[in-house]
Length: 245
Image 1: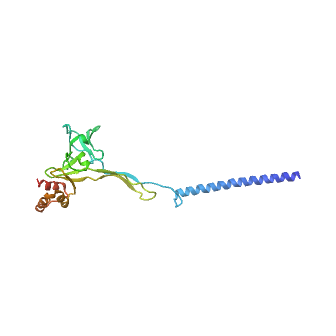
Image 2: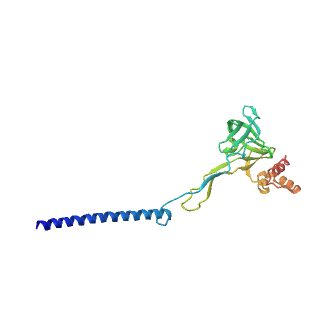
Image 3: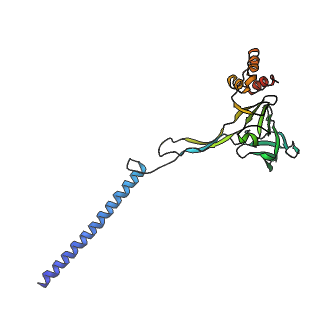
């Protein structure tokens, strides 16, 4: 009887050990199968695989500067000091005049300290920037910023330099892959200054300028009839306004 019980206990122990080993192997097989499935999902994404990617290349278009490179010119400070040596550029975003005195030496001037800036890019007409005082307008930038003077006379034409920074949108997973770009967008605007210092935003078109000139609008129309002038060209628009003096 004792031998039977001992044999039964040994058989039970062997059976339990077999089940335990078989269970471990089953778990191992299951685990391996799960790992393989995960690897397969990584290699071949499916609708059940939640993985996101952003392979877009973010670049930058445009520039915060007026010119794409440095140019000779002349800087006149509010105190009267004139600087003609070196190379210049104007950072519109930060409202700073940059002066490059040598390859390893540069200095910046806050716009408020500048009376006049003239840039002379090679192959182009000079660009002249000044503060225009006593303007009657609600647009603060016209009173504080440097304005580009296109025509100065009884009726003046100026440009308010404006750059806005547009950040590239975030790309979604697997959608719209390719090149994305942050952008410095040029949103400069033209303004007509009348003899009484009132200001009106204009486009370089006959309709817009005639409206802004008010009682002098007919005089501009007469000039345009006598002269084949494309007002979309700044030099032509300046010439047409100069004829009203």
